[in-house]
Length: 212
Image (tube, rainbow, N blue to C red; front, side, top):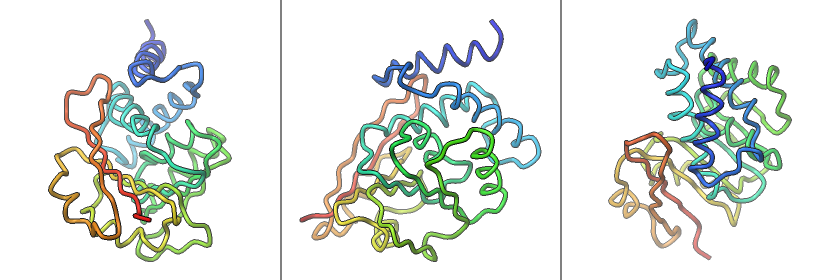
């Protein structure tokens, strides 16, 4: 089977393992993203993952594993890098507007090119550090991928978070102790195990919400 066909088959199997219907997903766009990332990686080293099958598991399916936890209509991906998880989530949820935030010029240039080639209309790329970024639009979901400690991220996300917003932190290690370091008078925190198809390593999601 040609490589593209194998990736398609693995993608559809992975989506089904996540409880998703492949027919309801832009599979061609996910694969186009992988192909573009592989191409740019050769010159710019945007990701340490080089093989397409690994990109599928560690980038695309890993990102899609948090779909059930997205909240509202406005998402912010802090330290998005090559667009993970925000670009993939924006492809999966065209009804949700996403801002992808990163201070690295190579990565934001890649993301703008990905928008040009793949055509999503619900993504805005901003080159900035989160501590310097301000927006008139508050965000219902703010997400990061193993970027910093939970208390630090909550402090930085606070000015950008909608009143009923949700902070999602994707982690590879146990975060129970980290969740207890959050200001529990202001936030509730829950650790949600994630199961990424074809991945044996631990994945956990720290779900943080404001208390009423």
